[in-house]
Image (tube, one colour):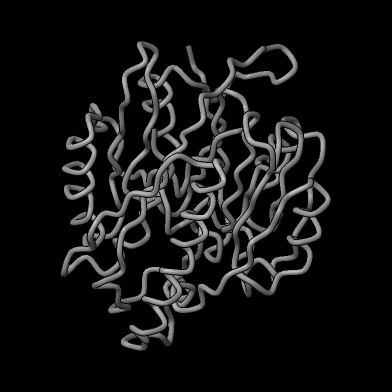
Length: 302
């Protein structure tokens, strides 16, 4: 079955999704900007304030610790950063964890585009093996950057897969075959939105906020067929504040919907409030110089 191209959203009943409740972070001990992998890194080589990096990362960690204390999540885990892996702190990219049809915790390891980031993946493999995950290597694709490009639809066994910059569209057929889960490929057409997690935030089964400048017309048509309500965020706000790199938690068993994002957005805050979210605004400017913010800096695991 071709699960990524033949889905009619009006003709299929999706299985419910089991949501992960643990947070994985990677410490920023060796975070640096030593080359240019995206437009945000231009002009920032060597301009890393390590004091700000540590303080901002700790603020994000404390938000998650608070959410654990309130029962929204179960645990915060921290993987130590590694010297020579300056982007490892962006731990949304190196893997794609899931629970297989037999209930086995599994993870697909990424095939990173840049050689400097390929070095990060073995450390994540070692971590996942240490906590009992089955690790899977892709064999039919060259580029796939994990949960940076693969976003779940809330409450449903359905994913959206960004392609065009860091991941290939063909990756999603292989991943769909492995996981048994449908994946909707979405072409990313702007270099400012090089991962799907920079421009696309599902807020509920029916609502999503996004920047339409990131997507092709075909991609927008697909999104419109799966969501009843779309909050459109201007490209300037999305680029200036990384607001579409927000992380939202909307689990049926939780008493509240919560979100954490870079401070300073207007339209995204309005959308989150309209959807009933309790909002945490934090400072991530030290990481934005490298092209990432909140969503990039965490991984949800089972």
